[in-house]
Length: 230
Image (cartoon, rainbow, N blue to C red; front, top):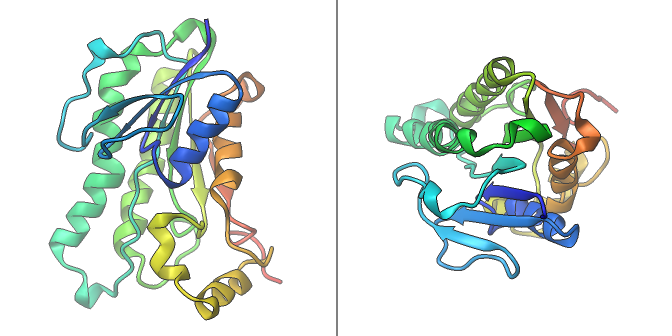
């Protein structure tokens, strides 16, 4: 029987790339998102995990892994950042992750070294202007990662990926013309923005046997942004 993965937010951007890579490798994938349609070859549940319960009776277990991919890019100075904006970023990024994992963790295959992957941002460790809301929400995700990794060891591994700007529909506004794209590329030591495939490759690695001795880590896939000055 093929390994079964749940990819929350698996129908767009990075989540879709993870879904497609797993499908190409012969895995079974169930995507969960607010979209009505899924990805060809994957099972799909249409719901909002921040407010709706996941119907676990419709998910065949045990699961080999879970990736929680929903996110937001809400870049505003504090003076124009509303409390509602701040609360929404936490709801999407941190609360949604906890709510989904609380439901799905019991379905994980503890005997097969199951894994969980969450997503942070380079802006947690590398302070950036206008990132107060998303940086704090993703900081909570990093805390959730290490706490769950400790609690669920040794049978379930939990890791987090911290990307920099990635060319997804979520980042479309930031890459909307050639001058913006060029400026974003030049900010990165590797002189380009990330692609969904770049991030998905790390996610599928962290959910595979190849990373069986890795847990509790926040791994930057960020074009060198967090640690290099060139």
